[in-house]
Length: 565
Image 1: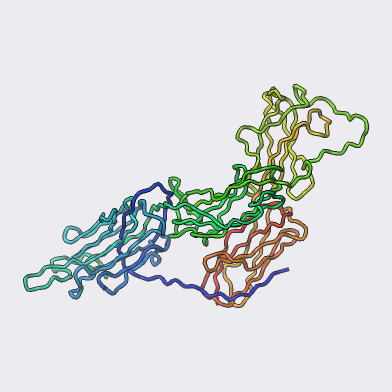
Image 2 (image 1 turned 180 degrees about the vertical axis):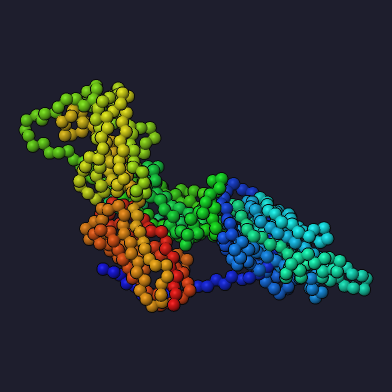
């Protein structure tokens, strides 16, 4: 069955002002803080946007500076000018100003700059500790400067400006701004009428934040003392500066769930990293505040007491532990891997000893540092488990067969998936093929025909699910847009699994429908636009585990759709 939804949307347009350039840096005290790199204007001839930059015409100049970042193949730039008109007031001109996001300061950076003068001053200015630090090109000592300008550490504002310099023409003449006749016309085109021009073709700002992530409003079953089945946790995360990048739930120090709760239309996904610093092509890459919902399959955890902690990380790499607690897991009333029933009343045939020396009290132990609870993405490399088999006194048991059994979450079936023979020092290594969330149990039988293991060792694996989404990238007004996709990995429960369709609108992801898949995990959905011609929207599909689906919640990659008439 195909679900259909018709909605009305209003396209939001942000006009791009064409304007000329001036740049300013304001100083701030240094502090130990997380850092990230913001790129703006252009990079490798690609337009990146000019968020954070504000144009201004100085001294009531009346003309806005120009932003050409998006208008030419070479990447363009932020440009400012001053015109040598006798009607200009002294020091008239234009300016582009950059200020960092709230809760952050400028810790450095580089500006690709071009400064030119004929009868004025063009400059890149940094204000550090209330003092200007400038790269300037001033008449008559400079006609042109092209090169990179470094942004000093501790700046909180940057500006680029071009101004006219008043000229003294005699005791009976006023100070005026115009191009003197002695200056030859060396500039081409409209540039010949400028007394000063400044431009930035690209900007990289290293930004720092002193704030730390926080969270509030914790609810869900993982906040209680006793938990069984799927565990949930919901809260609101906040982070100043670059915003909330990731939330994580750890159990006994091992990550059981992690996710970027809001990718902010892809802005919160780093384009690369340099020197351990994430690089974003956005002024505010991640949301300052966002809702977080975590789901943890507790069936993969051993029964008993466990410690739980929640971490929130901002895009600058600052991590705060925002919640800690204790859980009592109660899922298994008996051993999850029951031994085969004994139907004979006579002593069973046990066969020869399994390994040397023969020891019915032998113990399996995981290798040092081996995690017993772990999370991985669907389809990634198989898990390799390692450890040793020894007697109670520590004597290695060699040439013994150990078996690897698995039990998928939500299933009672137990199957053998691997085996290995111990080495001279009792060590073993078992490789589990890719699968769903499950209990992995290493079992040692002291005799070859035993049906009850002498020793077992449990590993609990949680697997992040995957869901695909397919849709045309153009939607015609008033016509149905058909989405489709499929859950990966199999194990779809009878009756299907739930998929949640979401649209990014009004600054956040919004649920527009919850629909079932078929038994093969396939789903489809119809959506109709009635307004919004020319606007683009992001959609994604999110899995909603129902307890029988052995994967953690996941979402598809956002897909853009543009509305056309």
